[in-house]
Image 1 (spheres, rainbow over the protein chains, first blue to last red):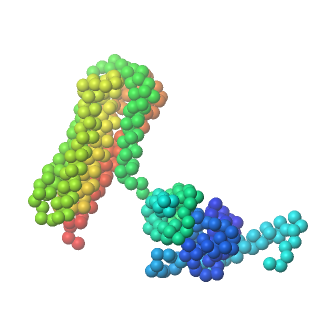
Image 2 (image 1 turned 30 degrees about the vertical axis):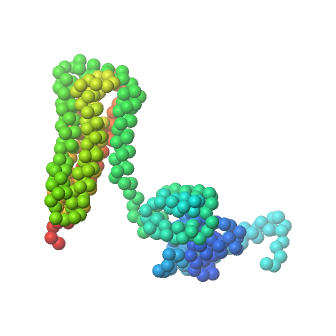
Image 3 (image 1 turned 45 degrees about the horizontal axis):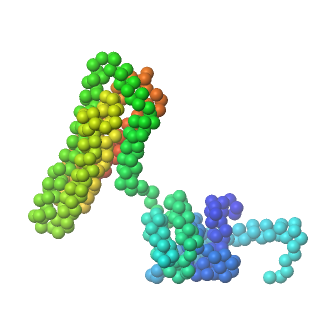
Length: 109
Length: 295
């Protein structure tokens, strides 16, 4: 996964946030920004968001949904879901290693 | 205010990006508070989109507009002449090469005269190449039954009148420096080569007219004719550079490396620019005439 996301450069984190946001259902840009701010506290600006959307679309991890409206929704693809699972698993391993080394014990969420 | 500035930043993105995401981004800007960081983020995003142009869905190969290439090449030629050739490459080489070449016999004088004549011919051909088109436009803007033809012909004629001023100034500069010993003293070698820095700029300037005319099928043959004459001008320009190169070879012992380098770059840019003008004029003429052929 690390190799797959390397090419995303500074958009790696933003791409993860977008994939998580779209994992629960299709959304357009404005709703994505609000959703990401809500669950992560990260306030994305449009230039950054669409830089990440361009890369994710280029990789086939998300796709636009046909819409007559000005606000075009995007949905996550199967490839995007697989990439998200891999990245979350990596983060889980990192989190476990960090918790073990620092002695932090997380309680139930 | 900040929202308007942020929306204006969308115009900084590549065309393919704007077509794909422009409306959506405008919608997001409309729906959210716009701040300075929004504007900065969009500017950075635009730079990123240009750098990764191929990733934009549906983007074709990145094309720099012809006008930009020609403007940069023209500015480059002027800078290569002054300060490049006249100052940076040292005047000692300019005069030394000529003295050395002239010491080898009459050939240097003949090449000096021939180069100036060829550049003057190329410049004259470039200007004359659009004369038939301009006169046809003058007639068409009064008499054509087609409204589009009349309007386009009028625009071409007005543009021709406006372009006459810079073309005349460049032409006078060339004649003054090459034939009348006016301006900075660059010696016979400078006189022989100055045309190579100015002729492609004249060619690029007049190219605007056939480019405008290509939308009107009835002007197609004139666009093609302009391309044909411009091709002759480009070949003449190349032949004149050949004379200059022979002169340089004759006096090479007196030339500094910077002088030879700047001269080589100048010759390349000059011929490349002329070839680009011909390619476009010729290609556009063929496109217009192809449209007239029955399917």
